[in-house]
Amino acid sequence: MKKLHVAIVLLLLIAAFAATDFAVNVKRTRLQGVPPPSADPYPNFVQSIVGKNPDIGYVFLKRNRTKQLFEKFDLSSLENIRIYRSILEQAVQPTAPEEKVKKQMVIYEVQGPDNQGGLTYLNIKLKLIDQLDATGNINEAGSFGYNSFFYNDMNYPDTAFLLVQIKDNLFGFQYEKTDEETFKTVKAIIASLM
Image (cartoon, rainbow, N blue to C red):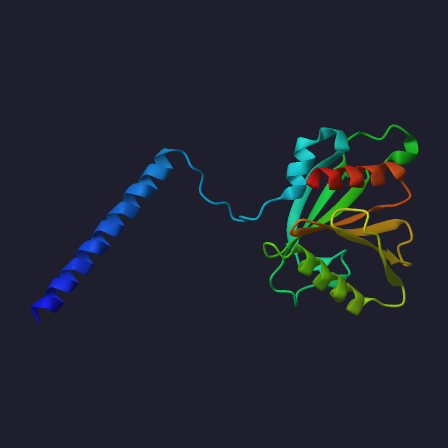
């Protein structure tokens, strides 16, 4: 019986030391100015790239979490991925009267499990193929990032949809394909992400 009492006292002492150590480390961290974790701990690659490269010609507007890709394909059944939709807007003011509206580009960030970028790419491609209708098709590109394809939608003939795998993440670009400068911007963003 005495061994049980001694074991309980030792466990209580160990718990007290652990709690004291935790409290001291939390206080030290706060005094050193370490910021508390943000509400969304997942990196915002798009905002980072746009912020570091002002010659891209677009500014970051907002980012929100979604379950869709290209506002058409539902990926909610893939539980091990996070999808973010970022909107970029043309940074320069239009010079010609016909350019009154600033151009926007939408970039989807698909963040999947570590070291499984190829598998995430394949799973998303299969989900898109499964949801294709008669108005769309997929053309494998392979010339951007590790893997890539264009999704073509006959209902949106002036809009390009490009999905690119870069390391463990995928990036979906939705932009106006009638403008060659926008495509150059997309290639510059892809190069920066590489």
